[in-house]
Structure formats: structure tokens, C-alpha cells
Image 1 (cartoon, one colour):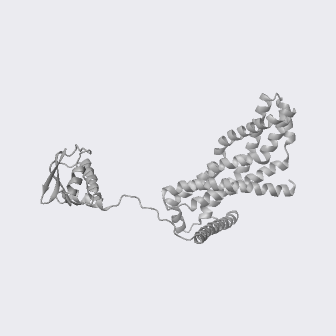
Image 2 (tube, one colour):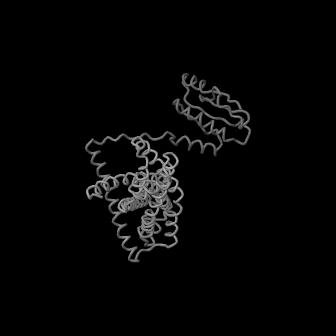
Image 3 (cartoon, one colour):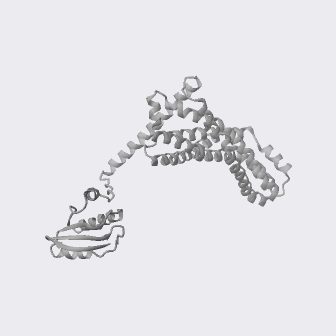
Length: 371
């Protein structure tokens, strides 16, 4: 296809000739138009009378590109010689501004920005407190038999929090016990006390390490699942439909998830305790030349009910945090698809942060209590 330039009635006509499918995007006509503009030209017309029908999409796209360049040069363009459907399409396309909007700079004073941010934080804290309050009331209704919930949904959530998580927790706990034994063995062998690796692994796993690892795994696995499920329901307006039917969201969606995770996470923690001790046994028997009977003898002697209960208490606290963070982020997700991903990420990050905070608080309290 070729483009011929004709001067007709003080207008520069771009006359297209040939096949509409063979569009050459490098036709050197912009230089000619610029030169014509310097000679006083003001209007450009497009003429497709010599084009073999039908008109193709590449041709329309090329005319649109040239029209934008003509507009950028400050010239007028005349589309009256084009077919009606092509005139309408190009006219509409040229009216739309395709450049992204520029972000408006915040011109608020510094103190005003601090106040606005503080008020935003206050609203978030207030929303979280109201969420926890409603959850507490829902738990009360659940245990008094007044809550509305479905048994099948509860069993499905319970299964996802229990035996479906055993595989990944078993693997990670075994490796954590193995790594903990390796790290301890490096120092203990220096003093000829390699046998005490068993005691170190037992105390470390039962008191805190197993609970932390299970909490991290469940935050990334179950907490994110809670947020994604509820966030998707928010996007699909399913939660609005439940509210319209008079169903309490806290009873129907939050409480079953909270109870399922809080009930199952202590058992997963005890499984992690056992497998962590077995992981340490691999290092003790294979690399420290400790007999298996001696290793497990020292490991059992180091086990105390106090340390086991401390670890289980940590796990229960982690289960509450993970459930609340996952459900809160999911229920407060936006209405678009991107919000589901943000809610999922927020649930995991928030749960991990509050788990660390809770660990610090519990450690100080237990130290003050002499436990």
C-alpha cells in the first residue's frame, strides 16, 4: 500500500492506494507534512477511495497513529472522506486521552498530614477492636448453641487445619530438630558434652521452637487460606447476601475457623515436638557417635510437663492470632480481584508480626513468674 500527498483546496490530502492489508508503518510522510505545515498548511484529510475493500484493522490503526501525530503537530485533520463507521471509531478514539493521569501531590501541611495518618490508624484500631468484640460474642453464642453455622463447613475447615497439614509440619519439624542439633553440637563437642545435644533439642523444641514453626506454617497455609476465601466471598458479594438474609457473619464464617485452628494446633505442635526430637537423634547417632538408647534416655529426662505446657500455650495463642488476622483481612478486603491478593499477604504478614509480639510478651511474663 502507498500513500500519495495531494494539495486540494488548500488542504493536504493523504490518498491511500493499494491493498488495505499491506500497511507500511515506515512510510516517510510525517516529514512531508511537517514541511507542508511550515509553508502555512493547516488541515490534513484522509482519502481511502482507492483502497481495495474491505478495510483492515491494521489500516485503521495506522490512520489512528497518523492522526495522533498530525494532532501533535498542531494541525487540523478532516475525517469526512472516510467511511461513516471508520469516522465514528476514529473520532471516538481520538477524543480519549490515553496518557495515565498524573498523581496529585499532597499539599497538606505537615501537622495536618500527621493528624490524617493518626486518624486513619485510629479507625483501623477501632475496627479491629470491634471485630474482636463481635468474635467474642459469637464464641459465646457458639458454646451456648445459639450460633448459626453449618456442620459440613465446620468439618471441611477442621480437616484443612488438621490432617491435611501433617505432611508439611512433619517435614519442617524434623529438619528444624536436625538443624538445632547440628548448631548445638558444634559448641557442645568443644567441651566434650555432645551427649547433651539430646537435652538441648528436647527443651528447645517442646518449649518454643515447635510452636513457632507450626505457627509460621499455619500462618502461611491456613491464615492465607482464610483471607483468600473470605476475600473472594467479599468480591463476589456473597457476604452481602448473607447479611441481607440476616445471618451473622461472625457466627457463620469466623467462629468455625477460629475454633478449628485453636483446637488442632496444639496437636500439631505435639507432633512437631516428637519429630523434632527424632531429627536431633539423626545428628546425635550419625555424627556424634551417641547410641540411640543414650540419646533418647537424655531426651526423655530433659522433658518436663512445664516446658510442654509452655509450648502448647504458645501454640494456642498463635492459633488465635492466625485465625483473627486471616478472617479480619478477608472480611475487610476490597471489591476487586487485586484486593484478594493484598488481603492474603496482609493476613500472613500481620499474623507473623503479632506472633513475634506475643512471643516477646509471653517470654517476659513467664520469666517474671519463674516458669
